[in-house]
Image (cartoon, rainbow over all chains, first blue to last red):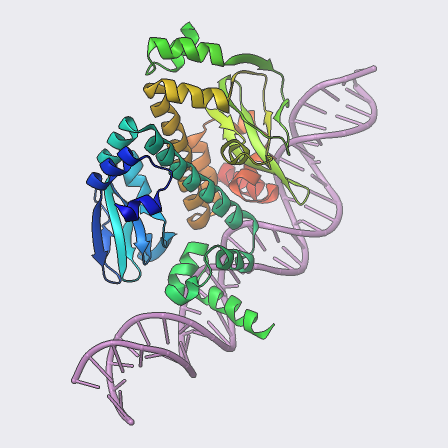
Length: 187
Length: 187
DNA sequence: GCTGTCATTTGATATAAATCAAATTGTGTT
DNA sequence: AACACAATTTGATTTATATCAAATGACAGC
């Protein structure tokens, strides 16, 4: 409870009480699957500690679609929001502590508590805006700039996450990323 | 009123009454600016007839970021949702009939009417999912496939919108698009 | 401390698409 | 119809990044 209050100070007491009822707390090791491809992934995860990624397999290749670090939400958004089987897997990238909440519970909370509804809408909106930025980066920036931008947004990510995942997230190959990093060292 | 009811059959009568109060009806010619760069673009537009695009100027180049046809919403999403000055312009692409509604009015309606709130959240969610698809297309599909996908999603768009805009939306140059179209004719 | 496996780097070549430049087609206006 | 101007096509060359292939580095388990 105290924890939730710190994480979501904008929520009212009564909302926090109901939220506490609705969430489950779990702990994981590295590389534990939270969502599998094909599932109806009606759960969202909030990362208290550790990290996770959403990814999918495209012609056998593992493509990271989303990273989440501390205080981020992560879900298999396609399945979560459109109630289709998930194209995404979600896995932890480090030993992690997570809160889990079902979509039904979220919708209930949103109906009952206006402040929760605002938060929910904000999270969706922020996700959309972040995708907007990512789209922009991929359309109009060189691989090198995208990598630097990523370092700005997630400092230290290269120490926490294998480079393959970072490369596929940036839409480049592992080799290209390696060359970019190599060039950086010299200058 | 009758019009609104047809456009939004999921909304309750009382909500439709308030919505009617909140919207303005406007008619435009081709290439009329609805939003200018730098504005605080706190308006959303619903297209009854015609079409519009959101675009921005990137190093002098005109980049289309979003198309809207009949029954689509369009807004300068960055400014609309984050209350920053808009990087986007919005202009009509054909003579159009539009509904205009302010963000404040939307927020009020969302507080007062749960059904409107659901609709609002759905629109944001759909925008996010569409961006997800677009990102995917740009990351993993050839220019040629992206063009065909666009034709599937917006049949007849090439007759309604200059190719430059379609090219920049797809993240390719006008010349490349022209070659793709040329190749298509031969096969 | 060695060994095997996975992660990363480095190298050579191929390719989709960009860029630069010019030609052609289309369109609206007096 | 003739003109100007915008939209589109076509051509030659360049470039960023992918792909294929091999070498090196790092680290977990014996």
